[in-house]
Length: 161
Image 1: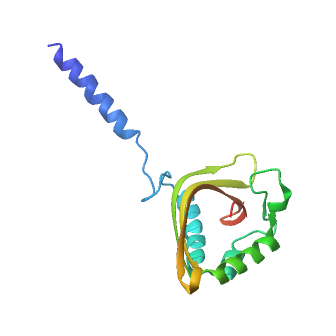
Image 2 (image 1 turned 90 degrees about the horizontal axis):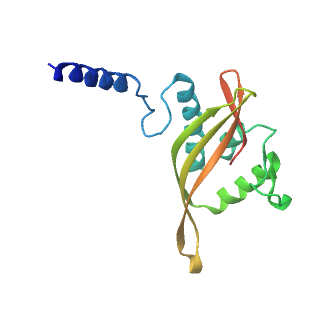
């Protein structure tokens, strides 16, 4: 008779655990909500624009308030909107091909401001002219945080590129 109550408790706990699990957007670690899907869709449009080396599309997604401090106190590597534009034009002109993959880790919505943060891991592979006119592939894998300005149902990138 004592196994029946134990079985009932175990079944209840299992149902409780299953009921509390979160669904994630496919191929991400981000909880599947309508708002998070909009954010990931925006970020995917950015990722695809990078692969196409579409400076115009990328800049249309970036706020005129864009400012990147490079994560340090050295002002020489800081970049504003105009600096970003010049950087993209130079880098994309030199690159012959780009493959840019992103694994989205989390989306953090700020309750105090009109900002949100997207943490992700990226793998960027790019083909550039190499030694003796032979193209070379280079690869970077790193963690990053994109900062987005929320404007109603639209977003603009304000830092993190």
